[in-house]
Image (tube, rainbow, N blue to C red; front, side, top):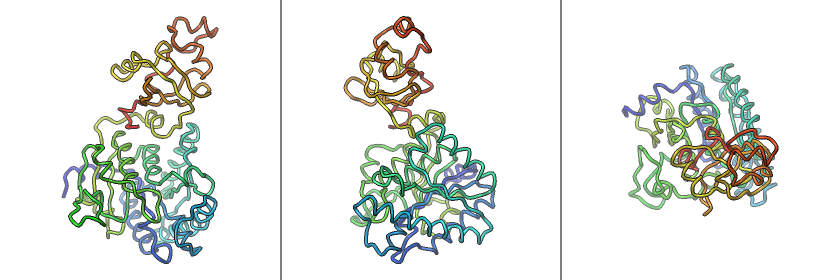
Length: 380
C-alpha cells in the first residue's frame, strides 16, 4: 500500500479517466469485454460518490477494423471517414455496457477550437457540469471527422489533460496497454524497469518516454508525459496504468502501487492561467527587451509598452499572444489589452504617453500579470 497514493485518491471526488485505442480494440474490432469491464469499474466509482468523466479513443481504430483496413490510411479524408464509421459503434458499445449498471451516457465530440475559445471553453464546462449533476457519464472524444489539424497532430492524452483542467478534476487516470512508464522500451530491453513514482518531470524522463506511437493510436508515451507535465504543474496528480488489468481502477483508488504515479505540485496554477497557458491558441507575438523579460520572469510584473520592441501578426484586443525575448525564447502566453495595431503605435513608450498617442488609455499594461502564463509556471 502506497501512503501517498492512498491519501491522494481518498480525497478524489472528480476524476478524468482516459482509455487508449490499444486497450479498447482487438484484431476483429472493439474489445467489448474490456469496454464492459471499464464501464463496470467506472460505475462502481460513481456508486461510491465519485464523478467520472471518460475520455475515450478507439473511434478510428474501430472504423478501420469495421471497414477491413489493415492500417491507418495516409490520406486525411480516409482517416476522417474511418473515425466517422467507428464512432457510432464505439458510443453504442459504451451505452450498452453502462446500461447494465443503470448508468446513462452522453457523447461529446470536441476539437481544440472548442477549448481555445474562452466562451466555448466555459460553455463546455457548464454543459459537462450539468451532465455530472444529472449522474450522466460524459464520454468525450476528439471530433476527428471534421477537424483536420487534430486528426493529423492531436491525441486524446492532451485532450484528457485539457478536460481535467477544464473541470478542476482531482486526478487523471490514463489507461494504456502497458503497466506504466518504464526505464526502457519493454519490447527491446528485457531488463526495463517500471517507474512507480515520478516527482519531477525532467528532460531525461521525456527522452525515456520516446515518441513512437502505437499502431492504432496517435499518441505515444511521450504524449502522456507531456499531459502529466501540464497537470502536475496545475496541482493535479496523474497515473498511467494498464487498462487491461483486472480491477485496475479499484486498485488505484485503494492506494495500491499500480502503474506510474506523477506527483502534483503543491501550489496549483489558477484555472484562468491554465486556460491561457494550455488551451488558448496564440494569434500573434510580442517581442520584449531584456528589462521587460526580467521584470516579468524574475519579479512577476505585468508587460508595459515600454518593454516591447516588436509585434508579429494582426490580432484584436483580448487575443492570446506569445511573448518572446529578442533571441526568440518563448517566455509565456498572455491576453493583450490592446490590438496589434495599437501595440505597434505605443511600443517603447512610457504608460503616460499612451493617451497622447492613441487618444485614450484603457490600461497601463499591454498584458496584465493575471492574464500572463509564463513558461516556468505552465511548462510550455
